[in-house]
Amino acid sequence: MDFVQSFAYPLPAAVIALLIGVPKTVLKDLHRWSDDIAKGLGVPGEDIIRPPARAAEEMTAYLTEFIAHRRDNPQDAIIDKLIAARDGDDQLTTEELIGNLILFLFAGHETTMNLLSNGLRTLIRNPSQMQDLRDNLDDPNVVAGAVEEILRYDGALFMLKRFAAVDFEWHGQKISKGENVYLYCLAANRDHRKFEVPDKFDIRRANSKQHVAFGYGAHFCLGGPLARLEMEVALPALLRRYPKLGLPNGDVAWRNNLSLRGQPSMQLRLGEGI
Image 1 (cartoon, rainbow, N blue to C red):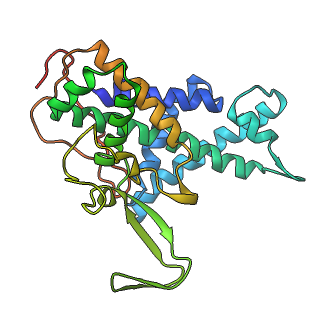
Image 2: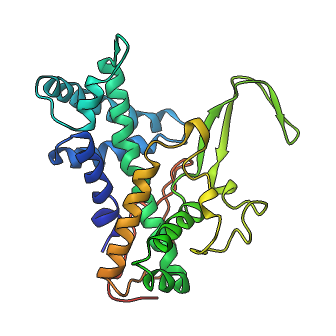
Image 3: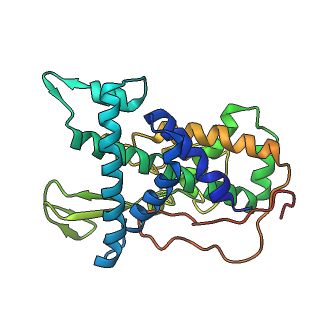
């Protein structure tokens, strides 16, 4: 089976759509829009920009109509709470609502999709760690530790972009206020000064949660807790259902993307381990 298309994409997409209040009928369009938006992340060039721009226009058109409908027919989802949200006398504009919803719908499933496939692939390729997790699926501490180590070792994001707030120097490199700074999360998560034997995958690692897979500080990922929860529920369910999982031989085909780290598809054998 193709694990990405059959499981890793549908699960987080359905969860985020349910939380926001978007009907399941839009999931196919959401998949197409998200794939096109992902093509423009971290890949320069005018030809690359056209698909995400078109996807954003289509999402904006859909969400504009959907927001208008929910203003007149409020329910109890995130979209309704955003419509009703106020800061004093200020209320979110339609443009602000659309911007937040596009972010939620895209980021709320795109990274979790990659985490699920990256994590399962890593577990299969580390059979002793896989067996340790299988033997302790009823121990929430072991499951949570495995998820944190997956985030550290095989996260879904290559990098985050920030703007320098002030002039400063970093390891001899002068960076001026306003310049783009690209922070490579996966490199930081393999820092030997922070993690002992960083290239070893170890679900019992004591400090694995100190990774920066979700960013840090004021810009910590809003969906981090949801991604953790989905992983902690989905991985044990998969391992209980399928006692033997395997990967076919061959190289891994990665997305051509400098920001998102994942596979467009991942073939999986359900009844044969490696």
